[in-house]
Amino acid sequence: MEQSHRILSIYTRLIQQKVVNKDQLVQEWNVSPRTIQRDIDNIRNFLYDTDEWHGYRKEITYNHRSASYIMSSSNEDHTASIYFLIALLQTITPVIEHQLSDYLKLLIKTFHSHHEPELLYHLNKLKVGNQVQPCHNLTIANRAINQHQKLYMSGGKEITPLYIRYQGFTFQLVYHYQQQTMITDLRTTDLTFSPEHFTPHHSQKHYQEITFEMHTSLYESMQYFYEHKIIKPQINGYCIVRFKICSEDAVKLCFSCCKQIRIIEPADVRHKVFHQLLKLQETYMLNHLFADY
Image (cartoon, rainbow, N blue to C red; front, side, top):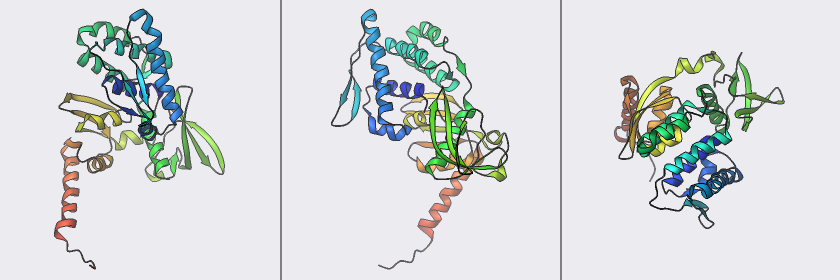
């Protein structure tokens, strides 16, 4: 995950008084503990540097026993917090994604409406770029590495993905090809799992807009990996979001996170979920299982 995304996610959790566990973040984002520590230090340093002229300070404390961070609570307005976050993003990245920009605008409109013009003015100083294709390739590469699968590049070139690194404000895939270790920029490389279905517009061909109702914690973990649009903001811990995602992944997501998500539309994808549920019911309730007791 990109540094700006990690810092935004960590900072949002902290100002919501959530306990941020270092080990969980390491597993969630597949980074080292030192990376998480640097992100925390960036937030700390920026808040401390601005404390003298703004008179605002939030302490981020670390609990060694639980390996977790927490931000000191108070009744102060968090407008300074979101302003500091926007300024911090300006110092660590030259461009942010549309999804990240939309999320910040939603935070401002929802929680800081009294200071909305001023905060939007500072947010609009950030350069916004389209990072949809790199995020799509990043998702495919991560999945292939975790599942020990081969990948295919343009022309049916079969590669073995090794790991992903972040350098020069972009994600790069390190891979093996013909007994050599090579590197490719995920912004300019098309990746797929199958050479038979490879086309330069693979994602456009197989992805479709699917509307979900999902828990906000699940949305927070998915929002940076798919192009999406918030249809209805959070109400009672759930929001309605439209993701551009393939139907197979959408169905798998509904079963793997069944307590946190359901598909609203389109109807054909909902029917796929119903069909799988009926097959599951048939397997467990109608079929007689033979077993030795």
